[in-house]
Image 1 (cartoon, rainbow, N blue to C red):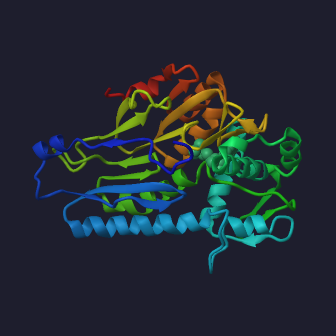
Image 2: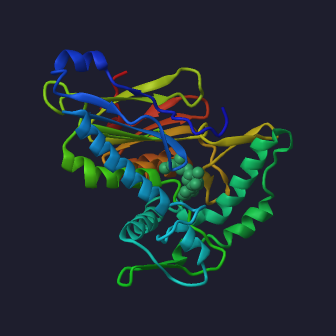
Length: 349
Ligand code: AMP
Ligand code: MG
């Protein structure tokens, strides 16, 4: 399937284990059911002592994620908030007053640009817009699918300068200094939002919870075993080649498992596949790997790293993972699976 909003990491909650090791009446499993935020299908699973408790917590998480979705939306404006679209529309015009979450995400993104040697670049908006337009066109009419001319990408890249994102923390404003520049936080917004929901709502509630934002998995606590957080969440990593189903299953608690892959959003032109992750150095979609999966305690960091490591070479990515203490699984173009020691700790199969 091409460009579907499909969840590519499947969760395996071992219900037999749960039933055999806990008081069925004490903990109830609650699933929110699929909802559409951040342009992807999502789901929340909670174990709580009552359905009311679970629904209350899951409702609070859903509401918070909804707010953050609006905040980081680059396509739509909403009454009463200055979001990323407001910021982009005001590039070269005026500083925009924004909330603390926007400033935090942009600061994190600018730091990440440095940490990843420019691979992770939220100022790449103008180039990403061109690829998105060609992808959408190519999906609508595969026969005439084409690739943007390099000149067009090069011209757009003149408007991609992350040093022109000016953050004024005293006045709570952000100014994109150059007209025509635009910020796209698609590579980190889901993880960043999940982490905020964890810190603000889930940790306080103390319930085991799993947030699945289109395959960006944040697992807090574990399904109840002998104690409230006795078990671990089993998370399956989808085979990017679409052959084996799940290539690995990891058991995690208080960790996020995030994958960037070339099968998630792509189109084909002239017999080649063009995915949605663009290497800022070449302005062309990265094609070093089929997928990269990252495990890290912070969901925003995991999301940022998986995108960056999809672009970087294995050596550069390994170094980056080590610096962040992250687990990593690379699937090479030939289908070879490479893991680092931190990832190996969590593999159950
Ligand atoms: P992810 O699925 O988290 O790897 O993020 C992919 C999304 O990140 C794309 O759909 C773009 O919106 C955005 N993106 C693509 N390339 C880059 C890049 N080099 N740096 C930052 N964001 C990017
Ligand atoms: Mg990402």
